[in-house]
Image (cartoon, rainbow, N blue to C red):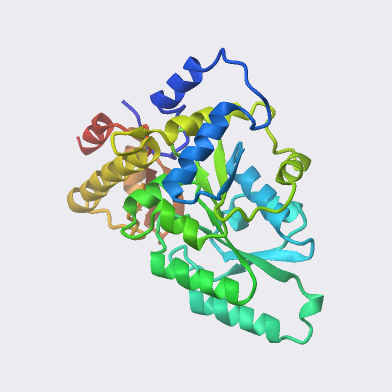
Length: 344
Protein backbone atom coordinates (compact mmCIF):
# COMPACT_ATOMS: atom_id res chain seq x y z
CA UNK A 1 0.00 0.00 0.00
CA UNK A 2 1.03 3.62 -0.50
CA UNK A 3 1.91 5.38 2.75
CA UNK A 4 0.94 9.05 2.58
CA UNK A 5 3.24 11.30 4.60
CA UNK A 6 3.18 14.37 2.34
CA UNK A 7 1.37 16.59 4.82
CA UNK A 8 -0.97 16.65 7.81
CA UNK A 9 -3.97 17.91 5.83
CA UNK A 10 -4.32 15.27 3.14
CA UNK A 11 -7.11 13.39 4.94
CA UNK A 12 -10.67 14.20 5.92
CA UNK A 13 -11.36 14.56 9.63
CA UNK A 14 -11.09 12.62 12.86
CA UNK A 15 -14.03 10.26 13.26
CA UNK A 16 -15.14 12.00 16.49
CA UNK A 17 -15.35 15.28 14.59
CA UNK A 18 -17.35 13.69 11.75
CA UNK A 19 -19.63 11.93 14.20
CA UNK A 20 -20.38 15.20 16.01
CA UNK A 21 -21.13 16.92 12.70
CA UNK A 22 -23.54 14.16 11.72
CA UNK A 23 -25.21 13.95 15.14
CA UNK A 24 -25.87 17.71 15.18
CA UNK A 25 -26.63 18.12 11.49
CA UNK A 26 -30.41 18.48 11.77
CA UNK A 27 -30.41 21.01 14.59
CA UNK A 28 -31.24 24.55 13.49
CA UNK A 29 -29.08 27.21 15.09
CA UNK A 30 -28.19 30.88 14.89
CA UNK A 31 -25.69 31.95 12.24
CA UNK A 32 -22.36 33.84 12.25
CA UNK A 33 -20.96 32.14 15.35
CA UNK A 34 -23.94 32.68 17.67
CA UNK A 35 -24.84 28.98 17.74
CA UNK A 36 -24.66 26.89 20.89
CA UNK A 37 -21.92 24.63 19.51
CA UNK A 38 -19.58 27.55 18.92
CA UNK A 39 -20.36 28.84 22.41
CA UNK A 40 -19.63 25.40 23.88
CA UNK A 41 -16.36 25.25 21.95
CA UNK A 42 -15.36 28.70 23.20
CA UNK A 43 -16.06 27.66 26.79
CA UNK A 44 -13.97 24.50 26.37
CA UNK A 45 -11.08 26.43 24.82
CA UNK A 46 -11.18 29.03 27.61
CA UNK A 47 -11.03 26.21 30.13
CA UNK A 48 -8.14 24.45 28.35
CA UNK A 49 -6.22 27.73 28.09
CA UNK A 50 -7.08 28.80 31.65
CA UNK A 51 -8.10 32.11 30.09
CA UNK A 52 -11.62 32.96 31.29
CA UNK A 53 -11.62 36.35 29.56
CA UNK A 54 -10.51 35.05 26.17
CA UNK A 55 -12.37 36.20 23.07
CA UNK A 56 -12.50 33.56 20.34
CA UNK A 57 -13.46 33.63 16.67
CA UNK A 58 -13.67 30.75 14.21
CA UNK A 59 -12.27 31.18 10.71
CA UNK A 60 -11.94 28.70 7.86
CA UNK A 61 -8.22 28.37 7.11
CA UNK A 62 -4.71 29.41 8.08
CA UNK A 63 -3.79 31.88 5.34
CA UNK A 64 -7.20 33.54 5.63
CA UNK A 65 -6.73 33.76 9.40
CA UNK A 66 -3.26 35.28 9.21
CA UNK A 67 -4.19 37.89 6.61
CA UNK A 68 -7.44 38.81 8.36
CA UNK A 69 -6.18 39.02 11.92
CA UNK A 70 -2.95 40.84 11.07
CA UNK A 71 -4.89 43.43 9.09
CA UNK A 72 -7.53 43.77 11.82
CA UNK A 73 -5.07 44.58 14.60
CA UNK A 74 -2.41 46.65 12.81
CA UNK A 75 -2.63 50.29 11.87
CA UNK A 76 -2.55 50.93 8.08
CA UNK A 77 1.07 52.12 8.26
CA UNK A 78 2.33 49.16 10.31
CA UNK A 79 4.10 45.97 9.24
CA UNK A 80 4.82 42.58 10.78
CA UNK A 81 8.22 41.14 11.72
CA UNK A 82 8.91 37.44 11.21
CA UNK A 83 11.61 34.89 10.45
CA UNK A 84 12.58 34.71 6.80
CA UNK A 85 11.25 31.12 6.67
CA UNK A 86 7.87 32.11 8.16
CA UNK A 87 4.70 30.92 6.45
CA UNK A 88 3.43 34.47 5.87
CA UNK A 89 6.71 35.34 4.17
CA UNK A 90 7.14 32.25 1.98
CA UNK A 91 3.99 30.21 1.43
CA UNK A 92 0.99 32.54 1.56
CA UNK A 93 1.29 34.14 -1.87
CA UNK A 94 1.65 37.63 -0.41
CA UNK A 95 -1.71 37.45 1.38
CA UNK A 96 -0.59 39.75 4.20
CA UNK A 97 0.94 42.27 1.77
CA UNK A 98 -2.30 42.14 -0.22
CA UNK A 99 -3.99 43.77 2.79
CA UNK A 100 -1.42 46.58 2.68
CA UNK A 101 0.96 45.48 5.45
CA UNK A 102 4.63 44.86 4.73
CA UNK A 103 6.14 41.58 5.92
CA UNK A 104 9.60 42.41 7.33
CA UNK A 105 11.79 39.31 7.51
CA UNK A 106 14.70 38.71 9.87
CA UNK A 107 17.24 35.85 9.79
CA UNK A 108 15.90 32.44 10.72
CA UNK A 109 17.82 30.04 12.95
CA UNK A 110 16.37 26.58 12.36
CA UNK A 111 13.10 28.35 11.63
CA UNK A 112 13.19 30.56 14.73
CA UNK A 113 13.76 34.23 15.44
CA UNK A 114 16.72 35.13 17.63
CA UNK A 115 15.59 37.48 20.40
CA UNK A 116 18.82 39.50 20.42
CA UNK A 117 18.66 40.05 16.67
CA UNK A 118 15.04 41.12 17.09
CA UNK A 119 16.00 43.55 19.86
CA UNK A 120 18.88 44.97 17.79
CA UNK A 121 16.62 45.49 14.75
CA UNK A 122 13.99 47.29 16.81
CA UNK A 123 16.56 49.43 18.61
CA UNK A 124 18.03 50.50 15.28
CA UNK A 125 14.61 51.27 13.83
CA UNK A 126 13.47 53.45 16.71
CA UNK A 127 16.84 55.23 16.84
CA UNK A 128 16.61 56.17 13.16
CA UNK A 129 15.67 59.83 12.69
CA UNK A 130 13.92 58.92 9.43
CA UNK A 131 11.77 56.19 11.01
CA UNK A 132 8.56 58.08 10.22
CA UNK A 133 9.33 57.52 6.54
CA UNK A 134 9.52 53.75 7.00
CA UNK A 135 7.00 50.99 7.65
CA UNK A 136 6.52 50.95 11.42
CA UNK A 137 6.72 47.52 13.07
CA UNK A 138 3.49 46.71 14.87
CA UNK A 139 3.69 42.98 15.45
CA UNK A 140 6.03 40.02 15.75
CA UNK A 141 4.74 36.85 14.09
CA UNK A 142 6.04 33.40 15.02
CA UNK A 143 4.78 29.89 14.44
CA UNK A 144 4.58 27.12 17.01
CA UNK A 145 5.94 24.79 15.82
CA UNK A 146 7.99 26.48 13.10
CA UNK A 147 7.97 25.63 9.40
CA UNK A 148 10.91 23.31 10.10
CA UNK A 149 9.21 21.53 12.99
CA UNK A 150 11.34 23.22 15.63
CA UNK A 151 10.02 24.65 18.88
CA UNK A 152 10.47 27.76 20.97
CA UNK A 153 10.93 27.10 24.67
CA UNK A 154 8.77 28.93 27.18
CA UNK A 155 11.82 31.03 28.10
CA UNK A 156 12.39 31.99 24.46
CA UNK A 157 8.74 32.97 24.07
CA UNK A 158 8.91 35.02 27.26
CA UNK A 159 12.04 36.81 26.02
CA UNK A 160 10.40 37.64 22.67
CA UNK A 161 7.28 38.83 24.46
CA UNK A 162 9.39 41.10 26.70
CA UNK A 163 11.07 42.70 23.68
CA UNK A 164 7.70 43.11 21.95
CA UNK A 165 6.20 44.90 24.90
CA UNK A 166 9.30 46.99 25.46
CA UNK A 167 8.79 48.44 21.99
CA UNK A 168 4.99 48.38 21.95
CA UNK A 169 4.54 45.48 19.51
CA UNK A 170 2.01 42.67 19.62
CA UNK A 171 3.13 39.03 19.73
CA UNK A 172 1.06 36.82 17.41
CA UNK A 173 1.51 33.04 17.33
CA UNK A 174 0.40 31.01 14.31
CA UNK A 175 -0.70 27.64 15.68
CA UNK A 176 -1.60 25.83 12.47
CA UNK A 177 0.13 22.72 13.88
CA UNK A 178 -0.31 23.64 17.53
CA UNK A 179 -1.49 20.18 18.64
CA UNK A 180 1.81 18.67 17.49
CA UNK A 181 3.90 21.48 18.94
CA UNK A 182 2.29 21.13 22.35
CA UNK A 183 2.75 17.36 22.25
CA UNK A 184 6.48 17.72 21.57
CA UNK A 185 7.19 20.63 23.92
CA UNK A 186 8.53 20.09 27.41
CA UNK A 187 7.38 23.42 28.83
CA UNK A 188 4.85 25.20 26.57
CA UNK A 189 1.18 24.54 27.25
CA UNK A 190 -2.06 26.12 26.14
CA UNK A 191 -2.11 27.95 29.45
CA UNK A 192 1.42 29.36 29.12
CA UNK A 193 0.78 30.30 25.50
CA UNK A 194 -2.31 32.22 26.58
CA UNK A 195 -0.19 34.11 29.09
CA UNK A 196 2.67 34.89 26.68
CA UNK A 197 0.93 35.68 23.40
CA UNK A 198 -1.28 38.68 22.67
CA UNK A 199 -3.05 36.68 19.96
CA UNK A 200 -2.72 33.09 18.82
CA UNK A 201 -4.75 30.61 16.85
CA UNK A 202 -5.43 26.97 17.45
CA UNK A 203 -5.14 25.09 14.18
CA UNK A 204 -7.89 22.67 13.26
CA UNK A 205 -7.29 22.05 9.55
CA UNK A 206 -3.99 20.21 10.17
CA UNK A 207 -5.07 18.74 13.51
CA UNK A 208 -8.16 16.62 12.93
CA UNK A 209 -10.78 19.01 11.55
CA UNK A 210 -12.17 19.20 8.03
CA UNK A 211 -11.35 22.90 8.14
CA UNK A 212 -11.19 25.72 10.63
CA UNK A 213 -8.98 27.65 13.02
CA UNK A 214 -9.85 29.14 16.41
CA UNK A 215 -8.41 32.64 16.92
CA UNK A 216 -7.84 33.45 20.59
CA UNK A 217 -7.41 36.90 22.12
CA UNK A 218 -6.52 35.45 25.54
CA UNK A 219 -6.89 38.61 27.62
CA UNK A 220 -10.12 39.85 26.06
CA UNK A 221 -7.96 42.25 24.08
CA UNK A 222 -9.55 42.07 20.63
CA UNK A 223 -10.17 45.31 18.74
CA UNK A 224 -13.72 46.64 18.82
CA UNK A 225 -16.23 45.35 16.29
CA UNK A 226 -14.26 42.24 15.36
CA UNK A 227 -17.31 40.65 13.74
CA UNK A 228 -17.55 43.58 11.33
CA UNK A 229 -13.81 43.55 10.70
CA UNK A 230 -13.81 39.82 9.93
CA UNK A 231 -16.84 40.14 7.66
CA UNK A 232 -15.24 43.04 5.80
CA UNK A 233 -12.39 40.66 4.93
CA UNK A 234 -14.80 38.07 3.58
CA UNK A 235 -13.77 35.76 6.40
CA UNK A 236 -17.02 35.55 8.35
CA UNK A 237 -18.70 32.19 7.92
CA UNK A 238 -22.48 32.44 7.81
CA UNK A 239 -22.59 28.78 8.79
CA UNK A 240 -19.92 29.23 11.46
CA UNK A 241 -21.35 26.29 13.37
CA UNK A 242 -19.50 24.03 10.93
CA UNK A 243 -16.24 25.06 12.58
CA UNK A 244 -17.75 25.47 16.04
CA UNK A 245 -19.05 21.90 16.07
CA UNK A 246 -15.62 20.59 15.12
CA UNK A 247 -13.83 22.49 17.88
CA UNK A 248 -16.53 21.38 20.30
CA UNK A 249 -15.50 17.81 19.49
CA UNK A 250 -11.76 18.52 19.49
CA UNK A 251 -11.82 20.19 22.91
CA UNK A 252 -14.16 17.74 24.60
CA UNK A 253 -12.16 15.68 27.08
CA UNK A 254 -11.57 12.03 26.31
CA UNK A 255 -10.45 10.74 29.66
CA UNK A 256 -8.42 13.47 31.34
CA UNK A 257 -7.45 15.63 28.36
CA UNK A 258 -9.08 17.15 25.28
CA UNK A 259 -9.10 15.07 22.10
CA UNK A 260 -7.04 17.85 20.45
CA UNK A 261 -4.06 17.20 22.72
CA UNK A 262 -4.35 13.43 22.32
CA UNK A 263 -4.31 13.78 18.53
CA UNK A 264 -1.03 15.67 18.80
CA UNK A 265 0.61 13.16 21.12
CA UNK A 266 -0.27 10.22 18.89
CA UNK A 267 1.13 11.86 15.75
CA UNK A 268 4.38 12.79 17.50
CA UNK A 269 4.78 9.25 18.88
CA UNK A 270 4.51 7.85 15.36
CA UNK A 271 6.89 10.51 14.02
CA UNK A 272 9.50 9.38 16.54
CA UNK A 273 9.09 5.79 15.36
CA UNK A 274 9.60 6.96 11.78
CA UNK A 275 12.65 8.96 12.79
CA UNK A 276 14.23 6.06 14.66
CA UNK A 277 13.81 3.77 11.65
CA UNK A 278 15.16 6.23 9.09
CA UNK A 279 18.16 7.25 11.18
CA UNK A 280 19.14 3.97 12.81
CA UNK A 281 18.18 1.40 10.18
CA UNK A 282 18.29 3.34 6.90
CA UNK A 283 21.17 5.62 7.81
CA UNK A 284 19.38 8.80 6.66
CA UNK A 285 20.61 11.66 8.89
CA UNK A 286 18.15 14.34 9.97
CA UNK A 287 18.28 17.52 7.93
CA UNK A 288 17.10 19.38 11.01
CA UNK A 289 16.47 18.24 14.57
CA UNK A 290 12.68 18.35 14.80
CA UNK A 291 10.83 16.87 17.79
CA UNK A 292 7.41 17.29 16.13
CA UNK A 293 5.30 15.51 13.52
CA UNK A 294 7.38 17.04 10.70
CA UNK A 295 10.55 15.05 10.10
CA UNK A 296 13.27 16.04 7.62
CA UNK A 297 15.94 13.63 6.37
CA UNK A 298 18.89 13.83 3.99
CA UNK A 299 18.34 11.11 1.40
CA UNK A 300 20.64 9.96 -1.41
CA UNK A 301 19.13 10.96 -4.75
CA UNK A 302 19.46 7.36 -5.95
CA UNK A 303 16.94 6.29 -3.26
CA UNK A 304 14.27 8.86 -4.06
CA UNK A 305 12.48 7.00 -6.84
CA UNK A 306 12.46 3.75 -4.91
CA UNK A 307 10.94 5.48 -1.89
CA UNK A 308 8.37 7.26 -4.06
CA UNK A 309 6.97 3.91 -5.14
CA UNK A 310 5.85 3.25 -1.56
CA UNK A 311 5.75 6.53 0.36
CA UNK A 312 4.29 9.94 -0.38
CA UNK A 313 6.63 12.68 0.90
CA UNK A 314 7.73 16.20 0.00
CA UNK A 315 11.05 17.09 -1.56
CA UNK A 316 12.24 20.04 0.52
CA UNK A 317 15.53 21.26 -0.96
CA UNK A 318 18.80 20.00 -2.47
CA UNK A 319 21.62 19.44 0.02
CA UNK A 320 24.40 18.76 -2.48
CA UNK A 321 24.83 17.18 -5.90
CA UNK A 322 23.88 13.71 -4.66
CA UNK A 323 21.59 14.29 -1.66
CA UNK A 324 18.18 15.89 -1.10
CA UNK A 325 16.38 16.98 2.06
CA UNK A 326 12.87 15.51 2.19
CA UNK A 327 9.96 16.02 4.58
CA UNK A 328 7.81 13.25 6.04
CA UNK A 329 4.75 14.31 8.05
CA UNK A 330 2.63 12.23 10.41
CA UNK A 331 -0.80 13.38 11.53
CA UNK A 332 -3.90 12.46 13.46
CA UNK A 333 -4.71 10.07 10.58
CA UNK A 334 -1.39 8.19 10.49
CA UNK A 335 -1.74 4.61 11.72
CA UNK A 336 0.54 2.13 13.44
CA UNK A 337 0.00 -0.16 10.45
CA UNK A 338 1.39 2.48 8.08
CA UNK A 339 4.55 2.88 10.14
CA UNK A 340 4.84 -0.92 10.34
CA UNK A 341 4.63 -1.03 6.55
CA UNK A 342 7.20 1.75 6.22
CA UNK A 343 9.61 -0.17 8.42
CA UNK A 344 9.04 -3.29 6.34
